[in-house]
Structures are given as structure tokens and as C-alpha cells.
Length: 101
Ligand SMILES: [Zn+2]
Image 1 (cartoon, protein in one colour):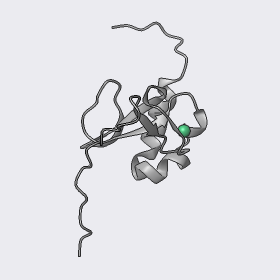
Image 2 (cartoon, rainbow, N blue to C red):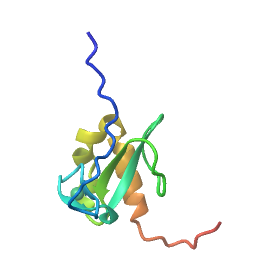
Image 3 (cartoon, rainbow, N blue to C red):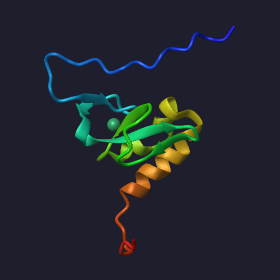
Image 4 (cartoon, rainbow, N blue to C red):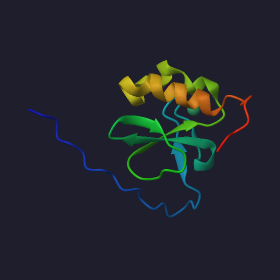
């Protein structure tokens, strides 16, 4: 009775375009990959993991606060939408405190 699981779809090389395009899961706009924040599917759920490129990924506009709204992310991230929304907004919050590493 379970729905057939779709195998992970490897990205097809595009013959005409060198620049990879992605679609924002919130607004569905297509833009160059560099203009997105990548959200990665982990075993714990969807997380914003800068630099991580393994596993399933989804893309959200890096510069559009509208696209960080929980309700717009819910379609793609379901129960993880609040966490992803919070992470996206935290990433883009100007930091008052100096970074301590
Ligand atoms: Zn967007």
C-alpha cells in the first residue's frame, strides 16, 4: 500500500547552460545557484548547513525575506518549516556581537 519511493534523481547535465539554475521552494523563481541558500535534508530533518553539499537539497532565495516565511516553506519542508525559517532569518540577522571563534 505504500507509495512507491522515487529513487534520488541525479542532476542531469544541461547541454545548453553551464550555469546551474535552481528553483526557490518558496516563490518558485528560477535563479542562478549562487543566489540561493541551500537547505539540506538531514536525518534530523531539513537544516541550513552552509557549505554542506551532500544529500538532498532545496533552495531558498538568499536575499528575499518573503521566502523565509514559515508558511511559504511549509509546502517543501512540512514540520521542519519553522526551524528552517528561523535559521534563514538568523543567517541574515545583522550581528551586533563580534564573532568569537
Ligand atoms: Zn524565493
